[in-house]
Image: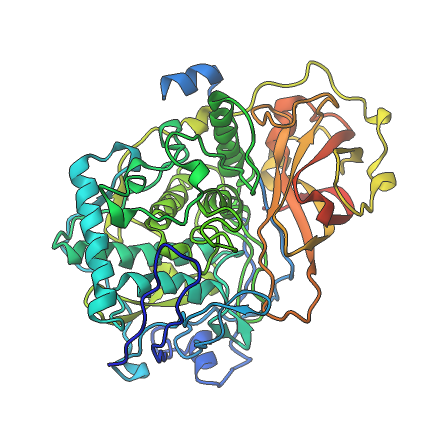
Length: 597
């Protein structure tokens, strides 16, 4: 058996891994009829057999005092770069396309080890589809801030045993390093599909991939400590008591294997996190930070996610390139939490935000899995909020496949269609209040901002940068819409043809009907519509330009216009406020559109 060197957890100058990883695949099938991914994998693309890659249209909020909610308890949408084709094929499991040297951190900087999985010991065509065990007791994932010392010790022991596998058998797929490399392989360019880099972020694959990833990770941990009921803790940053680094991950002398020294040392202890963090700490009281966080959660889960495509992200099939467009939760709070936890630039010799602040290394921090356990919980909760909030039912989504090893070191193929119900997968979440549901922003300006007092969008755009607040008026397609019309089409604030520098952290906030003297750091008000954010995610070819086009950026504003009292206005006033890297954003035009959601 080949051996490899384990990456030291406390430094970023990783030793090159020498394991001669290989990978293989199995063609997929659906009943007796070949499905597109089967034909694709066999190299026999049948162009007469096609399915659509398009998405169909598919809580009461009580007024409560914001301060009482906080003290009592202790949005965005990045749109497509590519328009989906009418005919496409689902993404197949990438078990034959892993390049040992293909993963990159940034242009010209490869990941210093292979991210590919351990070699298969069976013929690729014999890899079976996974079947859930029967008769198992439902595993309960606890809230991280509510666990006791016994649980923390058990979790630390499980991680210890997982890390021991790195030493006893570096090719064991259950090892801590092997598990961390799964995220690297799927996220940093090690895999290719249809001749293109495979990327499970920035599309509708984000939620199902991470759900399957955590499923097997959790079962492996339980098996190592002989506890099949073990559930991963979820870091409930959507609750005020969870808006700090969980205690279990911040005790290096007690639970050393849950601690990662490659974290931002300024964000340890009782520091309240920023769910909109993009590299710069916002100065404010703890109360204001928690209020901002709950507002962001309300906007992302409710206002900006009224339908599947806005929540999950854009369709991603073999005919569509990677990064077609991410959903609301992936962008905020998912990505800001990664950045908030990861190391500061050049801290502990880390140049790329390691561990949590970079996709290739994120899996090396145990906090990563608890973070994503709560992301996974958001999927479950979102479907209880009513309206059109339902799972995607398109074949190209449901038939997409991934490849994992289970707790017995056996390889399996899995389908998206089999992970839509977490209880059917054998786990659920400890019940915990979700105060953001009742945190609809109510505070608003006392009067409407006069649209005639600011330049029109046609006079303002194109803009070459957002280096200061930019205010303009914009004309609506129609005003005074009936409820039936609102149910049929969502009103969208749409920015077209953005060009962004991919090397930069970028965030700008969007406000509607906001006074020019507003405190732009206070998000807990009705005028806050959402944010545009972008992580540095440059391609692997350094010869290509760093400035990349984004087709459009949209925010759902139907509910917001109702709350502000602008439903009958023909023109509204919009302000763009730079937070990070706005000087590296150019926008061609802005409009308000009505779209079936």
